[in-house]
Every structure is written in structure tokens, then in C-alpha cells.
Length: 192
Image (cartoon, rainbow, N blue to C red; front, top):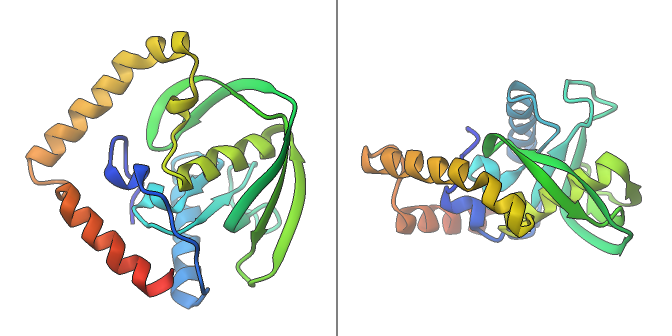
């Protein structure tokens, strides 16, 4: 498992809801946390590690601690209120940051790894992280939410990500879109 970088096709894939949690999925979640900490992130969505599941992990502290580790399975956001702008980055677009406007307060419903549903009214950084990661599950990246001016400011960096990806694919380091879609469909059949 590794964090894929933009414009890997799985980042644009709409994730499917999970129907079950088992030991293998728990292992995947543990590996997602490990990768997130290694990359010094605070959130990581399943499609960022090339998995089509409606699942993400978060830890605002950015380092291992069981009380701070949050798992969101099949999250649904509602009751968006207010507005807040802050700088965001993404582990799939390393070292790229830009201001993103999002609702200041949200309500989220999701399941944890024990299969229990929970609900929370969130604000601040946690609300931003939950929105950012839920966007990933819908195939939306933070660069899609930039103002026209901010998008122009990061265009050269985005072009460089696209060029590096094309080079990797040309060298055989990334399968073609059809192979990726077939693999995602096979994985979805197992859990979704």
C-alpha cells in the first residue's frame, strides 16, 4: 500500500460504501494510519491508497495515539453552516498548499471500526479535515475548490504533477486506466 499522487485515476473514483468490516480491513486501516503518520498528514482517504472504499482516517495530532485516531466509514455530511477559509494541502499533492473556503460547521454521521454509528457536530480543523477527506471519497480534490486566482497560482505545480505521472505511466510504473478500473471493480465486489 502506498499513497498515490495526483492525477492517479483512483483519486477521481467515487468510492463505494462498505458493507462489512473484518480483520483484513482493520489491517488496511492500520496501514493507512502508518502511511499518514509517515507523510506527516492529519487525514487520509482510502482512494488515496488506491482503494475504492468509502472510508478515511484522521488524527489531528498527526502522530500515533489511540485516543486521537478516528476512523470514518461511510460518512455523510449534513447541516453545513457558516463559511471559513484556510490553507489546505493534500498527501496526494505533496508540498502544494492553497486557501480553500468551506462551511465552518458541519454534522457528520459515520460508522467506526466496531460497526457503531456515530454523529458529531464539528467545527474548526476537524470539520475541515472531515470535509476534505469526504471530498476525496467523492473524487473531488482540494484543487477543485480553489478560487480562480488561487487555481492560477498553483497551475504550474499541478502541471508538474501531471507531467511526472505521465512519465511514470510511460515507464510502466502505473497501469492504464482500464486496468485500474477493472482492479477497483474486483476490490469493490469483495467489500461493497
